[in-house]
Length: 240
Image (cartoon, rainbow, N blue to C red; front, side, top):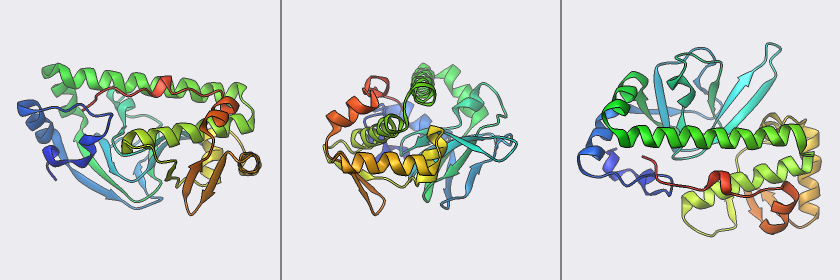
């Protein structure tokens, strides 16, 4: 799989690098890796020295408490880069897991850091990506601290729905939706029962529909009002 032929590069979040820059990006790639659904990509505290771009599938990042409780930090879709936190700290307590079967492109951390110094475009792209992650975490913090259960669920549903529509480059109201209620609960600081009730409320109000691991958003405007949601923190600009 050559970088110049990569389908993920067509996504709205990717910069159309060309010529020598694109060739260098291809040389930076250490290979690909397939991970089965539910299997670890990287374990907390055991960084393997790589960053990964999600080529196919869904993954998520998380922290574990000593008692086994899990906090999901973010869901990662095709085009997202996993492990940016290791750019500052070689080994962190953040882990990554495949939510569905995933295909990853691997980049060695030390080689990528050297390339950032030599190629300003790479550094600019990574800086924007980490800033976007910070904005996403800020929204998640507001949800955990100040939004009700139904508001938290509405906000996250619209975020995942919008991120996929931007990647697909279309206006479809349906999208893939592999997270279970347990995943949503761990992301939003709720119990699965709270998530179930919140989802039921949104369905009964005619705002969403979920079936066969797909999500249909019937009334995005009303859902946005409930979740106090705007897309300003996700507005895409070119990356790799």
